[in-house]
Image (cartoon, rainbow, N blue to C red):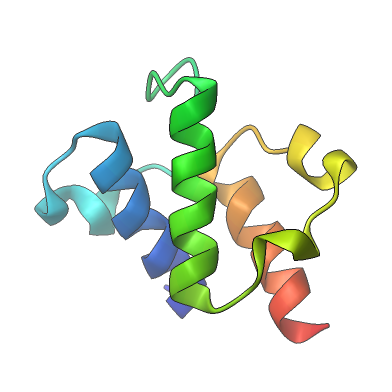
Amino acid sequence: MTDIESIVRRHLCEVAGRPASDAATLPLDDDLTFDFGLASLELIVLLSGVCDTARVPLTEFGEDDLATLRTGRDIVNLLAAKVTA
């Protein structure tokens, strides 16, 4: 598991109200809205927290980037691209 995956899993547990002990087994390919029940504000809180921890400014992401985020894996992939860019 990469550091970015760990960050996303940890924040997803917090926002989705899951115990921190679930982080390692949290399915990153599940839909953030339908499977985790996150509303739009919770998605913003999730991405904001992930970006803060990873030290990637939220301003690095455009509307097109944000519109494609459906799963935790999408966040991992997008963030990884920004970290290595």
